[in-house]
Amino acid sequence: MGKTWTVSDVMSHLATMYPPHLQESWDKNGLVVGDPQAPVRRVLLAVDPVAVTAAEAVDLGADMLITHHPLFLRGTSFVSRADAKGRLVHDLIRADVALANAHTNADSAARGVAFALARAVGLDGEPFETKELDEDGVALGLGRIGDLVEPVSLEEFADRVARALPAGPHGIFVGVPAGADLSMPVRRVAVSGGSGDSFLGLVRQLGADVYVTADLRHHPASEHLEDGGPALVCGSHWATEWLWLPWLAQDLLAAARRDGVELEVEVSTLVTEPWAIHVPTGGGITMV
Image 1: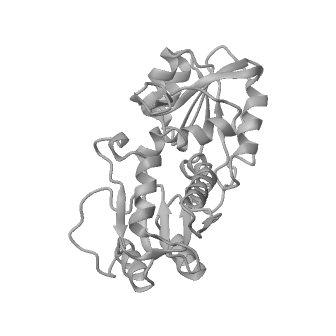
Image 2: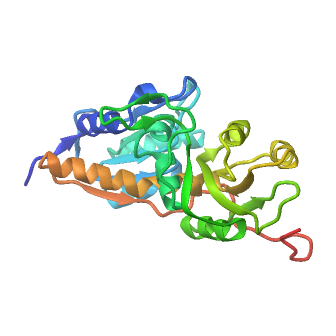
């Protein structure tokens, strides 16, 4: 049997890929459950630390579950089995499965969430605002903005995004700026996985033609489009962030090979949207 990483070793590699100091001030990242000295031979990656992904990790025989979202974003005083998060903690400890996460530090990383979403829609791009440069001179920060190789119509671009995102009940919604239509040309693209309406003003200032994100609220999106855009492509929180997981798997496996470590990495394909199905309203009319 070859060399084996410990939980602590995995955490060290995560910290290298997703430096903890890049996290937003309100965020929580790190080792949530587990013994730092426990061996890790199999890892499961998922967006959400929820009952189904925890059960998947246990059934898989994983030693560690790494998620994007934190289990406890705010402090807690109780972890009994009386609630869902407490049950998840108990189940993981009983099965000796460690739980760790990388959230907004992964959003800002060189090969993190924004990077993965940008690549999926045909973009390289730079962060909205550069926090710092890494040792290779790569800009780090939230979001990505850049130009497509060739301009396409908004309708064609929306189809590209829909094909790139994993299947789920949400799908995508497309918002067209006042005075434009689906034939409007798109070249300059901004992306931010997860909740992105806080960047609406910034992507306009950066000259984007379209902004790809998730969780857009009615009033901010409506006012943004009435003021001239950019156009909006709104996917689901889970789908826009899931695209990062295969990149994380690839980078973990590459690090393991460099260390001469035997490691199996699986990416969860369970859809952990809060919604079960999408049912069109108004007699099936889905577009106005």
